[in-house]
Image (spheres, helix red, strand yellow):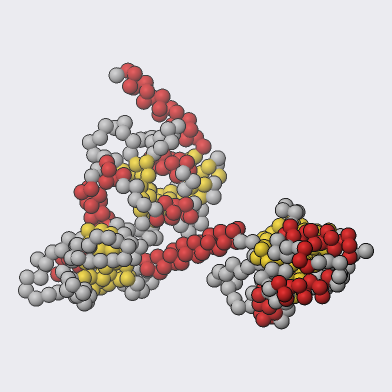
Length: 482
């Protein structure tokens, strides 16, 4: 017994020592004497605000009745605006829970999880937590029935009612007119295809918040029938019992127990209606925008394009200009930049210092420091689809081509997206010449006109491979280019 008492004293001393960094003084949450937020309420329920009070949550210490006093409780976190909630346990062994300091115990735990920082409540992380899968601590430690009872208790606090027109009222309504207590609407819909009863619940902006199915309801992405269950606009599913005992003679929505059961289940689980649909739509839009951006960034990183790489340009005057560069050889469309004016591989952007744009038709060369790759702007001939496609887009058949091999100004090139389509370039010719994907008879004529060297015997070279063209250029340099 003495050992247990000593252990408790040590634990309390340890908590008290660690709690010195956080103070709660007259409702102000202070970290090292700096006010970082506000707290109202008394145990077990507290409301925690940001410094500007633009965002608030409630935090409630939950316990299991009749459990030993040394058993750690847990915290239920709820967004005051949306009603969404989730649960978390005290996990930090160095601080844990102090029965004498509910408020500081909560704040310490929020700090440890990055839900509260030196800047106050971390709204982004809290919303991510509230939108994640339910921790289900109450269900595990109290039992499913108790969880249902908890939702029922929450619904009780709203003092819900429904009139014969299907308008839902609550004392917690927050409308511009203080006397307006509407929070939403419920209606019996036309029977489903199988003839079973359905209800729809809408908020004040007529956003569909939930649909209830009496029997054999089916929804996309859910492989079970919905029987006396409702599905919410964010795909959560809850049980709501059917009960037709409220209308023994004639039907009135105000006496419809099933309708009230549905509304109570929704409100008790955080779907407090009013303007909730707009909030969910905005969250959905943000999430989709985030997914689109991630998809776009992934596509960019997997593309052949060059984004914000250090390197240099040799301009038309032979001057070397260093900086950070960007060029797109293939389009990565997104909702902001998708258009029909994109022309691949023709514009090189210097994105640091004095912003500059280099056109491929100017013949400039640029290199990337990291990869040691170099590119040159020019037009090519030889009947290839790339240059003819570029010309069709904007009457300019030029592009920046990757230099695969170079010797004394003689080069072998390829467009980065088509590295197997090889191009010859010699100093005496302004344009490059495609040597692949063209018949031998036409290529032989093109080579003769391009090189203007009778000593080069066409049949002695493989014009379809890099090795074959390297041998050609070496011979051209030694035999013809003197």
